[in-house]
Image (cartoon, rainbow, N blue to C red; front, side, top):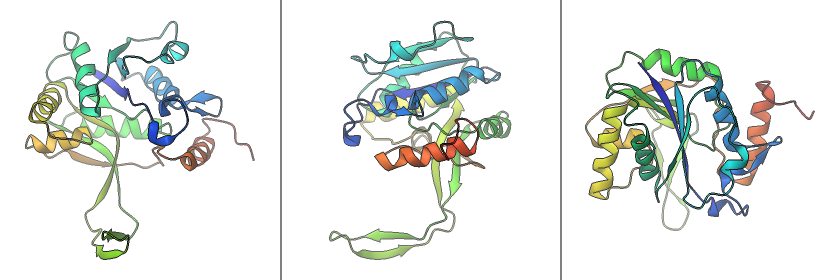
Amino acid sequence: MAIWAVVPAAGKGERFGAGLPKQYLPLCGRSLISYCIELFLAAERIDGIVVALAGDDEDWEQLEPQAPAKPLLTATGGSSRAASVSAALGVIADRVDEKDWVLVHDAARPCLARSDLEQLIDTLEDDEVGGILAAPVADTLKRADGASRVAATVDRNGLWAAQTPQMFRFGLLRKALDEALSAGTPVTDEAMAMERAGYRPRLVAARSANPKVTRPDDLVVAEAVLAANGVVESKR
């Protein structure tokens, strides 16, 4: 079955405070988003890519490959992640079947390892629903009170930190997202929309570091991971 990658990249990144959308921040001479785009373009099992962009995006054309080896489409994203992914699914609706796969990945996760991408696809390709790349929580978790003091220690047993890619059947994901949007229910990732629709996504343990860039210091971490994986040259 076909597998399409969807990259929601319509955010403004205002909380980051960099003066430009976070997905276009420079990292080792390239933008954050370029790392996942290049990975998906090179992956033989990915049939095409859709990038959901802000309506006033002025940076994408400078990065878009001039002769991509497979379809590289764009969609006009919305005000939320769910709206952006839904718009991207609409762009490929006439290119896929209901049971084809959609693999959604954060533009701000530049360190996705090819081995984890392959493992996710291998694990889920016969699943009726799909699942997500994730990591068991290793840190002790604290619940805070209103004064930023510890209110309780949370049992971490059975807790996982959700990552991306998140891989689901096209028809099921599109319906789940559209229902959440129609109901006005905020969903922070695709798995949450699927859970709301009554499904139980499978957890696939990541084997490599796959950090998300949310703060300036995360760029340093991402650079170290990319260097350790041989994606970029180490400065040390």
